[in-house]
Length: 170
View 1 (cartoon, helix red, strand yellow):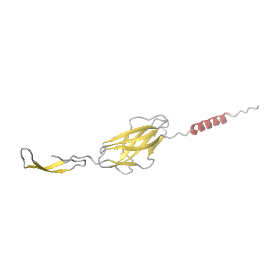
View 2 (cartoon, rainbow, N blue to C red):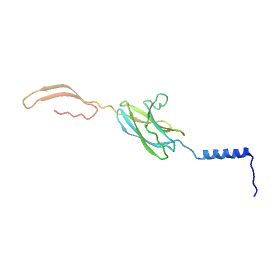
View 3 (cartoon, one colour):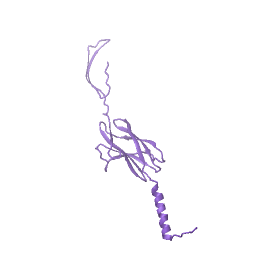
View 4 (cartoon, helix red, strand yellow):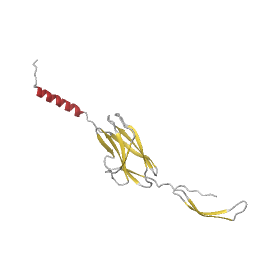
């Protein structure tokens, strides 16, 4: 058996090459965000739910939202989920957006960030939801009571209905 001795420069090169191959052969990927939904939308708030797989890197999730179509530049509203996701399995998350305006269309995207990179869902563009009209109470006006007796009376009034169910009885 014959032994070959390689020059030190070549051995250093091979070592660096093997380290390079080992480092880049395992493809590191940023977190994966899936299953974004808005199960609850009120006139001043909305719950955004999602699933995230941090892919073994501590991950922060934010929701960006705007009243302007596809406006996710400077000044966009951002809400951060108050926990950091970790591990290598899919986990459920949610955040409640508050202080919203009633009867508006909101444009949103979910943004995940970790040391490997950023990801957005949807990958390009946005999803949206509409906040309902704020509830109002009915108003009674022009009330007149007439034909009053010991056991009965007639009442006439105007009723301006709110935007909810209105019942009237006397």
